[in-house]
Image 1 (cartoon, helix red, strand yellow):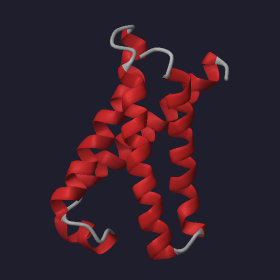
Image 2 (cartoon, helix red, strand yellow):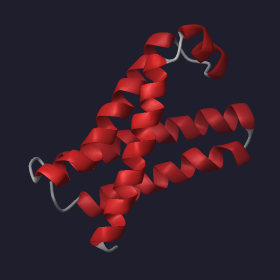
Image 3 (cartoon, one colour):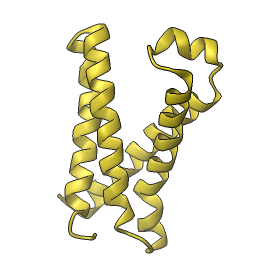
Image 4 (cartoon, helix red, strand yellow):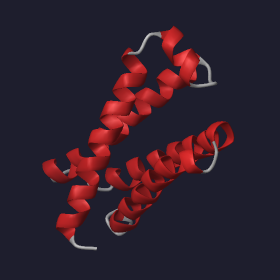
Length: 118
């Protein structure tokens, strides 16, 4: 895949994870309990992981430092999204699981592009 295309994917994924993770951190506990059948502590942990992972998708490339970190960020975000896909399919059906599944596949593409950098 071309370098420019990969940058677009990484930037879009970073924006998605910064937003999603940030919302998990600032949304009141009662609202989160209605939306997700997981403990508040675990949801907040996932929020922190998404924010840090989103930053690690783009910052190493921009700073030209610690570039191997992007591979591990994409790996961690893939794991999160596989779990999100499973929970979504179990709760809302296959059609609802398409979006987190596509995000997981995009994270896998980023991992593949950065596997040589480690």
